[in-house]
Length: 616
Image (spheres, rainbow, N blue to C red):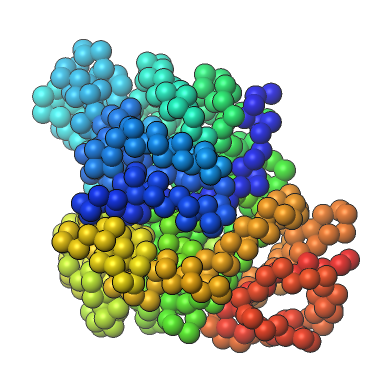
C-alpha cells in the first residue's frame, strides 16, 4: 500500500481556503498576492487550522480568475514570483501548516502554448492535445451547453473544425485519451510535489473522460442547448485515469489529493475516494449546495432535504471513503446571508450555528477566508427572504435540480422584488462592478431572453460567485478595510464591502466571544476528541423542519449529540425521553448562547446550537 493511503493526517485536519486575489495586497496594487499570504500566516496559525488550500496562482490571462492556466510552471506576475512562493512555502512549514495547491487539469487557457500549436493545423503534433471535431450540417458537433453559458463548442476558422470547452471558449478541454497529455500533466504534478507541497486539489477532475463520439444530450428544460453532462462527467475512463495518476505520481509522495467532482453522487464518491482503489484521498461535491434551486433561480431551502443529504452521505460513505465538509468557498454565496440571517441580532448566532452543524460531522472541514469573521458579503439574505416569500414554493424537491437558463428565471422574479432587494446591494447596482465571467455570461444570455435589468440583477445578487470574492476585511480603520496594506490611492480589483467597519479581523480578534474564537474551539475539539473523526452517525427527529439534530457515537459507549436551530423562531421539540437522556450529559462541548437552559434541552432559542457529550 502506498504512503498516501497509510497517511491519514487529513482525516484529523481542518483546512483554510485562500482566494489569493482577495486575501491581502502586500504591495498596494489592488490585487492580493503571495507575499500578502506570507504576511498573514501568523493569523491563520492562530486560528488553529492544519492546512491551506490555495486557489490557482499559476500564470494566466485571468479570464476565469486563474482557472484558465497559460503556464503551469510559472506564477501569475500580479501574484509575485517563484521566489515569493518558495518563501511562503518555507514559512508555512515553519508554522507546521500544510499547503494544497488548486490545479486545473481538465482544461487550459486558450493562450497555453499547447493550444496555440493545436490550432495551427490538423496535422500539428499538438492537435490531439484537445478535443477537435468537424461540424454536422454546417453546425457544431452537438448542441451541448457550456457550464458558464453559451455553447460548449467554438468554431476555428483556420482549420474549419470545432473545439470543445465545457466552461468558456477561453478554456479548451484537454484530451485525456492522448497519452502524451497525461504524460505532460503528470510531469507538472511531480514538479510541484517535488517542491514540497503537501497535496493537490484537482479542479473538476471528474470531467476528464469524455464519451467517445460526443453523443447528443437531452434538451434542457428551456433554451437552445442540450445537457451534455452525462457524457463529460464521470466518463467511461475516469477511474482508469485516476488509477494511472496514482501509479505514476501520487504513490511516491505522502500527500492529500482532493477531487472536485460536480454532479457526483454517493456511489461515485465511494469509487473515487475508497482507499482500496487508490484514486483520491477525498472528494468535494456540490449536491448539498444545490438544494436551494438552480444557479440563477433560487428556491427556499427545505431543511429536511439538507438533513436527508447529510445523513445519506454520513452513513453511506462511512468506512468506505472520505468527503469534504464546507458551506462556503470561492464559488458559493456566503452561507450566513444565503441560509442564515445576516441582520445584526442574529448574524453571530446563525454563523456559529452553521459552524457547529458542520464541524461535528465526519469528513474534513474547510473554512473559507472571511467565514471566521462572519463576513456577510452583499447581505443577500434579505434578497432571498423576499424572493421566497411571494414567488417560491415553501419546500423543494430533495433531488437537486439545475435549471440555469434565463427564461426560467424570467418567471421567478418581478420588478417589485428587485426594488425591495436592491436596497441591500447598493455597492453592486451596476454590472460593471462584477468580475465573474459566469455572472457576466448570465447577464448576456438573460438580456437576450427578455429579462429586464432589474430581474437580472436580482438573480445576480442572490447567486453570483463574486459574493464570495470581495476582499478580506482586515481593519475598520485602514483604507479599503486594510486589504491594500494601508495604501489609500489604489482601486482594489473588486469593491470592498461597505460593512467592513462592523465586520473585520481586528474586531474579531479583540472580542473573545467572536466567531473567530468559536471556530478555534471547534478545531481544538476536533483535534482532541477522536469520536468526531471516526464515530458513527445517526439522525434525530429527521422530519423536523427547523431543527437539525444528530448524534455521533461508537461501540464503547461514547456519544455526542449536536443540535442546531436553523430558524429565527423559538422551537420546542416534545421528546421527554431524549431530554432526560441529554440531561445526563458529562459536559457541554460548545454552545452559541452564553447561558444554558437548566431543565429543557429541547426548548430552542433562535439559531441556537450546542453539542454535548452524553454518558450512556
